[in-house]
Length: 286
Image 1 (cartoon, rainbow, N blue to C red):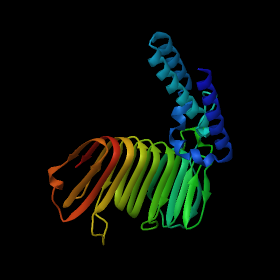
Image 2: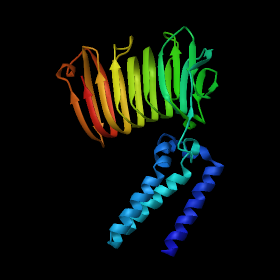
Image 3: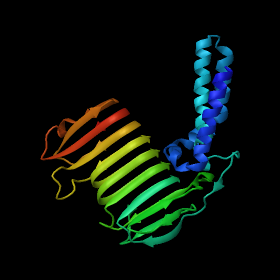
Image 4: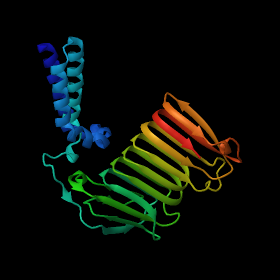
């Protein structure tokens, strides 16, 4: 036991040292940080109770290893979401933060309810959070302290044909995207329910937890295929609505997925490629 404890302390020290030198390495944990941090006392009490009730040594050892793994995650997970307080700052009213001209938008490292919708000819950003905005060819919107607020909202209004791509990375909160036509839409490390409507050539979702509603209003113009939807690693329920005359070609690999495709999408003039890998949940195409 002493050797195991010594190895654990050494390993934990290396993780903490890596976090202090290269904190960006742990960005992939950002969407899960609120759940890891805020469930601490619940996990501690459950593990302690089970440890007392269970008499089998192997089961106890397994339980101890699980707790050690959780403790390691607790200590190295990004801490911006965690507070010893049980109350949070009220985010207040939404205000206009500026208008911008960019061809791409990246929203990352933010805990808030996010809406991207039609707006003026420019890109208008509104929020009740202390977000950071970096303007250029790519408009980057982020927030390091958003986890300290409740009722946080981010609203981005986009003019028609203003942007070619939209990416959301490391976000926690419900997401609504309603745009006319866009080339690519990417969701990476997103926790929350997602609603997407409009026309897009490509939709890629990686490492997400939540339900997703996708409404492809029409096939993008000048495309051989209607669209392509790719889902890699995640869990939840995905409902996909497609325009008439679309044929769905699914490719499912390494997933525990229930796939239901309406008979009307077995044939069509244009094709939608549906690629799913390592996904747990239910997918319905109708």
